[in-house]
Length: 262
Length: 364
Image (cartoon, rainbow over the protein chains, first blue to last red):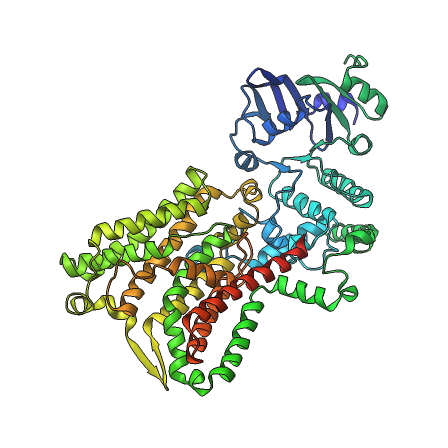
């Protein structure tokens, strides 16, 4: 995606001048961020650069002191991840936030279960387990994940990559506008990481833009369309991974080299 | 449409398969490699997936064992139905306790809550001339309120349930003494003024088996809670909170509100138990059921519910209560001293928790 294309397109998510202080520590200093439709935006930064605060503000876990967030051009505020999610900002947390002792289906519909139709559902509040299982199976197979044999298998019996798959399937299924993925490959082995990167491509191909936070440079450079480099609480620059080397990115991140002017 | 599905099936074919693509190291979960497991491991996995099996096996084995030890007297219809009658109250308390323990909590105050509710029912209807049904309703409200009070303390003050309910146990017990002045309400007075309070103690004879209505109510409570826990979102959320509270919160469950509602439902179940207990005991005694708290926890634990939350079944607690009943009945018919009944029960608790720990290692 070239720069001219981006400039005519309206960003899905815009953060403007976000600031957050913890006592005297400035975690975010007037930080900006734009996410365009259908792209994977990598977010990298040194430890303590404020990228996790930035992400927590975007997913609703931290309330900024000042600044604004625009979703589809409209100003939005939220005070919890639940409210952010209602607006269509889904987050796949590093720890995945799955309940290991519940089944895949239960997990995918946790907090937004489907009830049976008619009296059984409206009065007795019975769940429509079949509809949920069918839907869960469909969503997993849409993401190319339906080698999981039994949709009612407990999540704790799945491998790390499969769990990631379930968490991603959950995040991309409910009228989602933006998916934030926090260190999705940090806990995984080589093969499973590869599978998750493919999964990210799969989500992008379905038109859902992704913000990808990762410490793993090769992974970010492989899947990101643009890379947002965060330094000293604000956005230092946005680079095109095809035009920059990984070593450049690290140099910008750590302040060893001046970023390109754009 | 067909093009899309073709694409998907083509995609599926081209996808590296999870089952084949994962390295050997990651393959130690049960759906993929049952063939390579030892028998012990298979048992462990089976029990992990079916936690109610253990109490069922223990119940069957103990019934058979006591049949041999204690002889025909144990197997008499009268004795077997007596066991069911005897476990009714502890069973109902265990049902309430299961809800709390599934959330990784514990409730040391259930028996005190129950006695308090029964005091309201008895005091109002027998001594203050309130019609029986409104008096029972006040007892129910007392149960819901005391349960919700526990829940509010747990969620608002962020105190461990153990400490909260240790405190409220004493508070509720003190309230019982305050309201009754340590005086029991006599069975004969209840019979004259509010016979409805004795309703669940009435017996029916089914071919030699004598059941109280209360025993059927207990079964009904278990069946109802089973549906609630397994067929409704509320029930799934109980498990999710006990399993991983933070994950539940991030999934959009309002965990604090849920917890208060769980404690309140447990309180209502306890209050139903209060009504049944009046029928069972006859009188309302402020010092009765002093061991009910621990007995209910015993039944839940023996029933295979994990004290760490998120794992277990409500029906398991019913079996747990029955196991305790079978042990006490069998050992006393066999002529053993009460102290050995307690000894055996103690061993049973430790074995049950040991098995739970072993089964849980599957997921570690």
